[in-house]
Image (tube, rainbow, N blue to C red; front, side):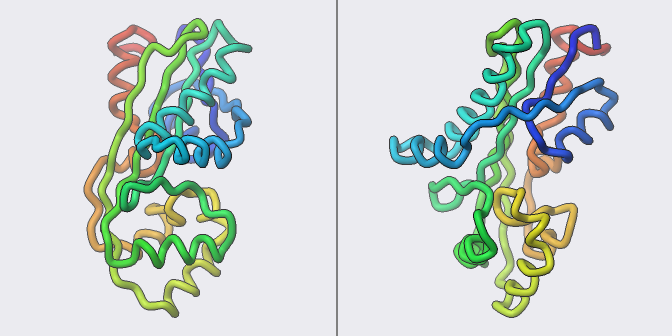
Length: 199
């Protein structure tokens, strides 16, 4: 890439996706208080889609102020269930409560991208996936959270489809990259269109 690309995220999964696609990218996590911001937006009646977009933009903006010469990619993922937004679980008990609520029902993953250039937002996209959970047993649920807590505590929805979390579902509709937290195909298309990467 002719310009530096910075990923305003600590997500190893997002970084790996970008690098596997042949992009030269540097991870530079933007530290923001996601939980406080999410709760404040919810209190104002913000839609989960807008919460994901706002968090992605805040991350990108934080780096853009200090790195005006670079392209900055801010990302965030919010789980939408019953018109409420869910973030990462705060404890195993929180994970159990979230998964019990969604058991046997459908929810959405909303993955937002905001791209900054020269200190300003130039492109944004929100991908959506619809996932339906099976009616798993309480014993299995307890064992699942115990076995996977170290991993799922970093994920909206308390699961990773690339791991044992796939066993929570009966149906998954949507782009796999969106589910992993980065709608990669629309991003690559935009970067090619603008000449930031070779087409």
